[in-house]
Length: 201
Image (tube, rainbow, N blue to C red; front, side, top):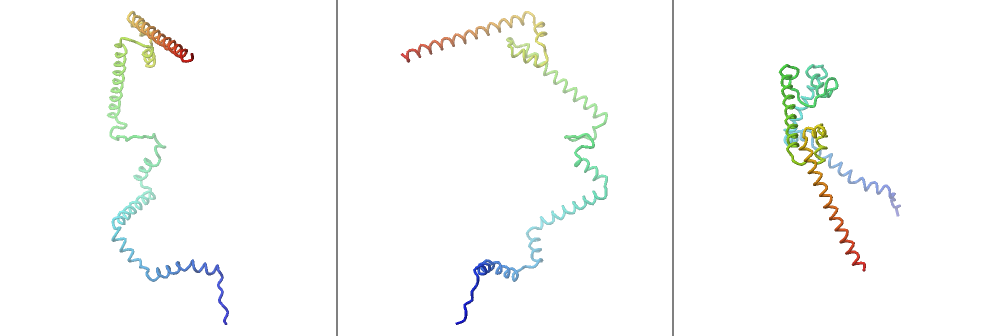
């Protein structure tokens, strides 16, 4: 009887694992399509993408050549975009070259500054009129007027007797409200004490 062929287990496992890869390789080699077929498929399905990418590439090549050649126009564009205003004053807004640095531009600037000044003055006058037209004045109104830069001492001197009368009315209402709150608190405490005493007994 001839001797039996013995295959080591690791060789058998390795050959079993390699079998699908070898079969796929043989299939791919027999059925491989040439490069012309892929070119036709790409032209048929992605022709617009190919033309756009070719145009962009041509623009990029032209730009790089201009930068290498030292074109003044490209240098100016790069200075504006890449240097971010490090060589000159940085601007975060568009500059109108027709007005910038001209007498017309200076006149326009003065006009706009004057309009802004007038607007602020109108707003201040309106706030002052609202403050003076209100009949009652609290401590809050005086603090806001001080915050705006108007001194309360001057206001009292200009107001005269009327301001002192207003302060008397405000102080009378303040004391009456304090007394009312205190009375309500005492009444609530008394009722709570009496109700609590009845429950405990």
